[in-house]
Image 1 (cartoon, helix red, strand yellow):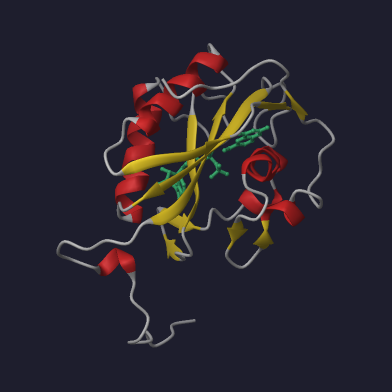
Image 2 (tube, rainbow, N blue to C red):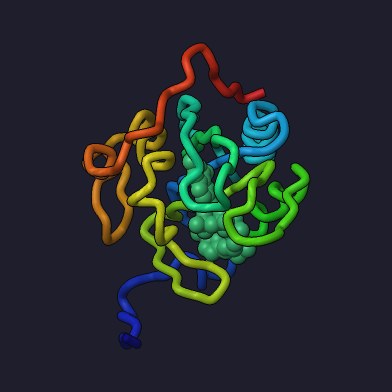
Length: 188
Ligand SMILES: Nc1ncnc2c1ncn2[C@@H]1O[C@H](COP(=O)(O)OP(=O)(O)OP(=O)(O)O)[C@@H](O)[C@H]1O
Ligand SMILES: Nc1nc2c(c(=O)[nH]1)N=C(CO)CN2
């Protein structure tokens, strides 16, 4: 449905000039190929090194069976990074894809094992529905490997249209997911 834009609501992604509001951004990391811990740690470093991005929280690491993907796909390690940023949503997507590439991500068939997945879960309350960019991430709310780590750092975080992450964490299928004891990603 195409709605007439409300002229009283400012869209941060259309602003030009000096002032840009800070938005809370949630980034989901995943790896099920290669040195999974090094891949997640490297991705965190790359996020932290991004200009105009400030880390607010880093979740514990969780391990779970691959959801979807080819039979016999290796298990994933996942974590969530919560940041504040003034960057445009699309600039954040470009950065996410560049970080995946830097960690040897090879794009073959959908669901194939990958060294690194960097998904934008939410960018403030921004809603985007474009061919190559959807916000909030359309599957994040039903994924234990996103909502459990996120809820562990900010249970009051919100997915626009889906609700509070602490509540979503009580609703998702947690059959195969466990927190990895004794493993913490560090901001280096
Ligand atoms: N919110 C988003 N975050 C990251 N990528 C997105 C987002 N919305 C759309 N995309 C697009 O999705 C494309 C494919 O991403 P990818 O191959 O990582 O999907 P996937 O991880 O296999 O599946 P899923 O999207 O279910 O996590 C990217 O090239 C990107 O343009
Ligand atoms: N457990 C788990 N399963 C997945 C994951 C993931 O990060 N963790 N990512 C996918 C595509 O993004 C598909 N399936």
